[in-house]
Image (cartoon, rainbow, N blue to C red; front, side, top):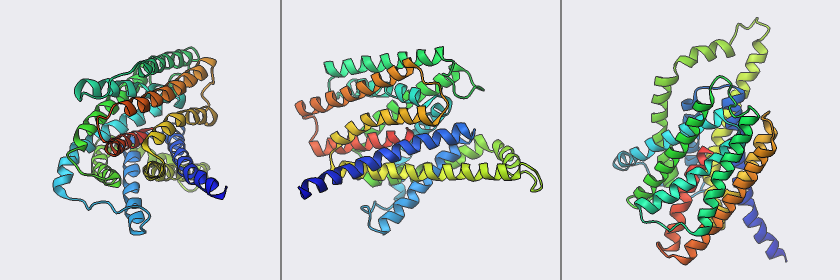
Length: 355
C-alpha cells in the first residue's frame, strides 16, 4: 500500500509542478503586460531567456539536472536561425496575450495545432489526419468562433482599449502562423543536432538574449525616459511611495515570470522523465482549462456563457486530439518510440514558453 502511494506521489508532484509553473507564467505575464501596461516586450522576454540560462548553470553545478553541452561557436552559428524564429514566435505571443483576454488567447492557440498537423503531413510526410483528429480540429475552430463571438458581443474582445480589434487579432493569428512555422522548422532541424533536452533549452535561451537586447534597444529605447519619469518622481512628491511600490511590483512580476520560464523547462523534462511524453501531452491539454479559469478569476474580463462554452469546447477538443494522436502513434511506427517521444517533448516544451 505504501509503495502504491509513493508511486502516485512520484507521478503527481512533477505534473503538479509543471501545471503551477505554466499557470503562473501566463497569469504573471498578463499582469506585467496589461495591468502594469509594460510595453517593453523584448526586454521582458530577454529576462525570461537570461534567467533560465543562469538557473541552468546553477542547477548543473548542484547536479540537480544533467550537465548540458558547452557552447560551441560553430553550433551556435548553425542554431542562430532557430533562435531567431523563437524570438519572433515568443514576441508575437507576448503581444497577443497583452491585447486579448487569457481564455480567448488559450482558445485561439489551438489553431496552431491544426496548422502543425497539416504542415507535417504536407512537407514532411507525417502522420495522417485520422477521423478523430479531424473532428477535434472542427471543435477547435468552433470553440474559436464561439469564444470570439461571445467576447465581441460583450465588447471585451480587446483588453487594451488603445488598440483595435484588427490589430489584436492580427497579433493572435500571426503568432499561430509563426508558432506553427517555427515548430515545423525546428522539427526539420532537430535531426542535424544531437541535442539532449537541456542542450536545446541552453542554446535557445543563450542565443536569444543578445537578439532580444538588440531588438529592445532599437524598438523600445523610447520607453525608458517615459518609465523613468513615471516610476521615479521627485522624492518629495505625494505619489512617490505609490509609484515606487508599483515599480517594485513590476520588477517582482518580471522576476517571477522569468523564474517560471525556467520552471516550465525543468518541470517539462521532469514530467517526461517520470511519466512519458504521452502523459505530458495529455497534461498539456488538461492544463488549458485551469489557465483559462485563472484568467477569468484574476482579471476583470466579463465572464459570458459563450466564452465559457468556448473554453469547454476547446478543452474537449484538446483532449480528443491528444487521445487521437496517441492512438495513431500506437498504430504507426514512423519513428522509434524513444526518438519520437523526445522530439515531441522538445517542441511542446518550447511552445509552452509562449503560453
